[in-house]
Amino acid sequence: MSHFGLKLKPEELTFMNSAERQAQIQMQLSTAKKPITATTFADSFGVSRQTIVGDIALMRARGEELVATPRGYMYVEDSPHQAIIVCRHTPDQAGDELTRIVDNGGAALDVIVDHPLYGQLRGELQIRTHAEINLFLGRMRKNKGKMLSELTDGIHMHTIAYDTPAQLTAIKASLREAGYLYEETTR
Image (cartoon, rainbow, N blue to C red; front, side):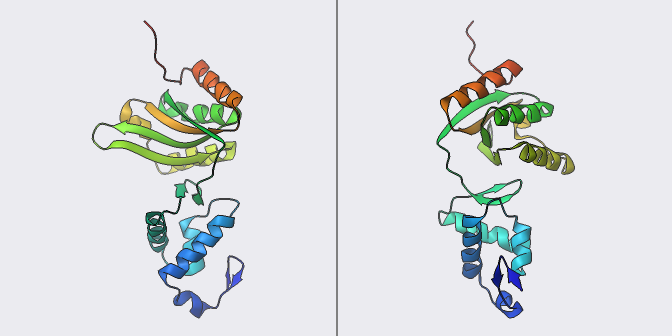
């Protein structure tokens, strides 16, 4: 049986313990070109998806910088520059907001809201391309999900990754033009 390019016998999968699975998960994610889903790992190891979710949780608890994105698990990607921006818009404008970020050379790494009961809530996005925007919005519709910003009257933050200061300036200008950038106003 092929296991991510490794030749494993069915009996080796059966006796693989959590530590061995986690080592394999770490190896695969560290060399992966794209995120890998829990279901893909589960099928490969012959265990449940929930077993993989538990393995990932244990790995995070040990300090592995893993994120769950709409496309699967991945290691946190380092970006030369990051900034937090504050936005406000309706849920149906989220696709346009993300498109403006990507079109101007940025990546929307997360979405953050300040909830009055739970404090800061954060959702990993890791959106860098139009395909990833479409995947995110498609899954939102399919699962009848709600945007985190719906908890806070549309106000939310994004950690934005960018390569040059000019890209951040362009991202902010585009969001400002659309009326999405939430800024202090002088009265």
